[in-house]
Length: 116
Image 1 (cartoon, rainbow, N blue to C red):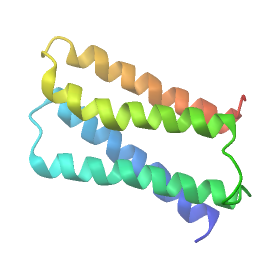
Image 2: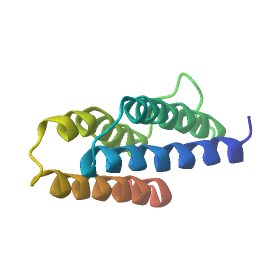
Image 3: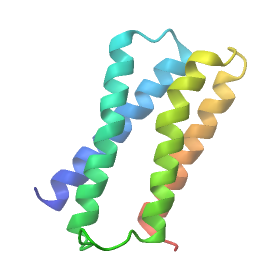
């Protein structure tokens, strides 16, 4: 697939994941929303790896530092997001959700500027 296809898939999966987290943090979360959010989180990783391959990073090379930072952010969001949405009190959920929004913006900054 082309770079543009991977990029569109990556961005759409991010939007769906953010929407799924928002539903989880601000309303009752039906089971199909959890499933779609999990699948879209996985698509973020798959499309991101496709983008990395199209940028010229071959299979045997190590990841650049900015990619490692983005993978760590993705792991934090995709693992702790749904867990905290279910377990936290209603007063803490909005604060944590905005923390996740900050992490999404941080990941975007890292992807665009590649600071390290």
